[in-house]
Amino acid sequence: MLGAERKEVVCAIPTPSTRRQVREFLGSAGYCRQWIPNYAKPLYQATRGGREDPFEWTEECQQAFKALKEALMSSPALGLPDLEKPFTLFAAEREGTAVGVLTQPLGSWQRPIAYLSKQLDTVARGLPPCLRAVAASVDLIKEANKLTLGQPLTVKIFMM
Image 1: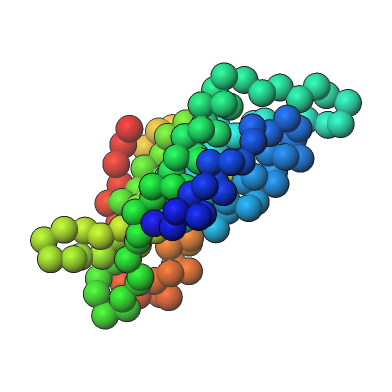
Image 2 (image 1 turned 90 degrees about the vertical axis):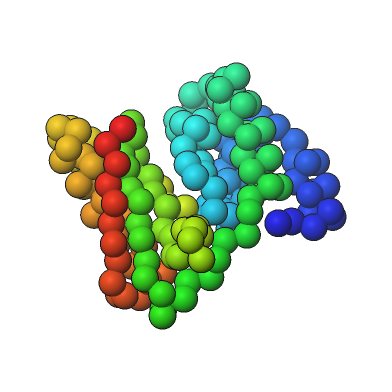
């Protein structure tokens, strides 16, 4: 969790008025992307377009911006990976995005180690739902491997 001083700084961040400001915000908050599910997906669309294209800040962008600021201030502390304990990856695919949570046991609970999300490539997005879930799992396993360092990993796939 953030301290009071940092929460004030996050609260004071103004609403972006250019694509560059959106990218700057996402970049500066990027250190939390592993802890916040779907970290930048809604705001990513606001960064698209060329210089001659008008910048469009929709109500959806504003809601996503506000939600991300709130998540930055309230994200729970995640556990550090313990290579002596088994890892479990809960994975799913939703609207062309692989989403997952890497966990480890903590008593009778599963403690989150990292929230993972990654856009599927265009080929995978065109696959049937069951194969998109498999492609999403493969992408998430690659991301989780950076934290598990090749330790055994149980994968649980959910169809949405």
